[in-house]
Length: 60
Image (cartoon, rainbow, N blue to C red; front, side, top):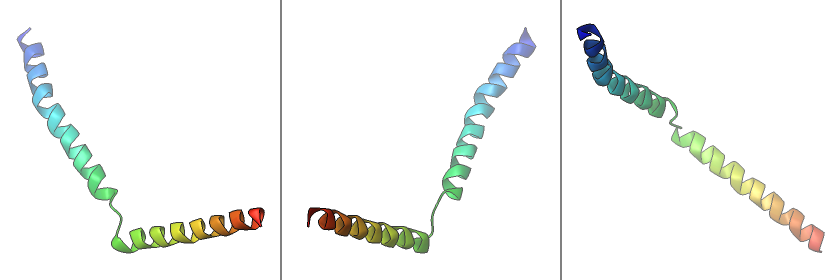
């Protein structure tokens, strides 16, 4: 019985610490560089312009 209580105590402490470590790792590895963000923004702008021109041609 005492061993089970000890296990739950350890899990209660180690679990949240492990979860925080995994979340921190994921946040650090999902970051994009400034160059990647700028490239994505430029590609989005170009795509929107293409869609706008295509819509104008369909109307025209």
